Image: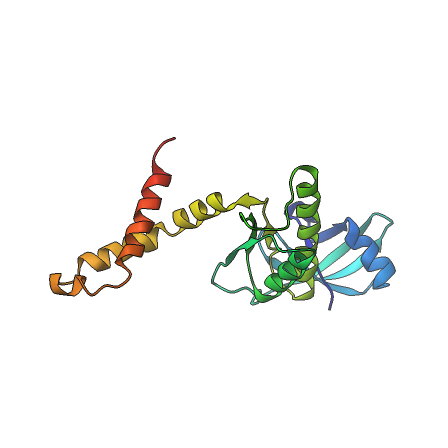
Length: 208
């Protein structure tokens, strides 16, 4: 059964209104008609519905909610990918497969040695294109969310974001280290990594 996403304001009074490019897809590609059923997901809260088409117009399709469906597709692990900009159109495949595999968010990163560079108007167009790919892949793989493709950031900002998000793990690692007996601390092989993470975190939290 085909799946489509809508926003909260498109679900009103036990009815759902489909708008945008999905209208053309339903009418001219799937050639659906009144009485046909769709799986529709509210992208704002991941609520799924079994709905029946009751009115097809040129710019919108009205559906009646038949029942609320239990959502089981999403993982309880939130995954964010920081992806360096690849050559050519490889990013499109990465976004498609990442969405199909359950990623929640993807952040393009302009690394120092990236051959591909985008900025300005090109960046805005690329993000719009990539978000559409995420949307299509989410429909095809029956996701309950559309993974967000963020604006491109540089590697310094990416490191900063990851470090701040990792603060609970860094604090827990320090507590675990301090709880070790004195003779055991010397055998910890990744202590330098913990110190580096703490230093980076402290620098990020200082007012600038």
